Structure formats: C-alpha cells, structure tokens
Image 1 (cartoon, one colour):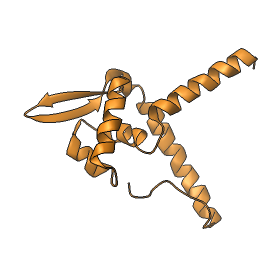
Image 2 (cartoon, helix red, strand yellow; image 1 turned 120 degrees about the vertical axis):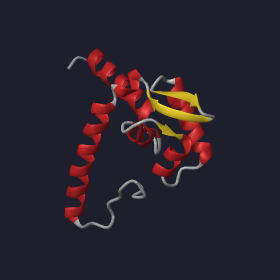
Image 3 (spheres, one colour; image 1 turned 90 degrees about the horizontal axis):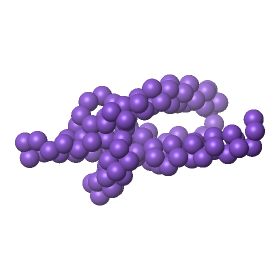
Image 4 (cartoon, one colour; image 1 turned 45 degrees about the horizontal axis):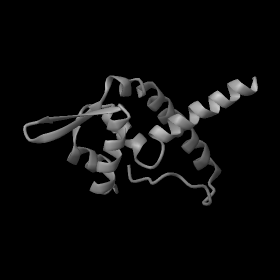
Length: 120
C-alpha cells in the first residue's frame, strides 16, 4: 500500500473513531438502531450515563448529522438520521465481532483481561 493511501486510511479510521468512539456514542447509536426513543428511554438503556453526559453526546451526534431530534407532545424524540442509518451494518459487524472476542477471552479464563462495563 502506498504511503498516501495508508495516510488516508489512517485519517478515515481516526475520523470514525472520533465520531462514534468513546464510552457512550456507539452505545447511543446502537440503542437507536431499534427505534426512535425519548431521552428517558435512552438513559434507561444506557445504565450509568448521567443526564449531563447524555445531553452532551446527543448534541454531538446531532451536530454531526448522525441522529435527529424531534419535538412532539412536549417530548424530545431521537432517531438515527438517514446518514446515521448507514452505520447500522457497521454497528452489527462490531457487535458480532465483540461476541466472538468476548467468547475467546472468556475461554482464556484470565482475570486480568478486561471488558467494557458490563452494565448494558
């Protein structure tokens, strides 16, 4: 692979990690793959997230056109945007990989191996 192509690939991967990485962004997106949800429904799905953090992450995802916020009946509803829906296959692939990885790690029976918070 040429150096320029390698640099572009690294940039592209970094962009994706910036957009959906971190503890909560990908979990929010995965939660919204099912259906639109109210703020409280999202907070219930994402055990351990504070309201302040959820607000911040939702604003970030909305600014980056991955989710949309709709107001109806004096409630805010969040859903994946059309652009955000293009992430669904990636989220499904990540989930499938994670299941395989978790199984592999559990087979090792090593207490030093760490998983993400298992509260989900």
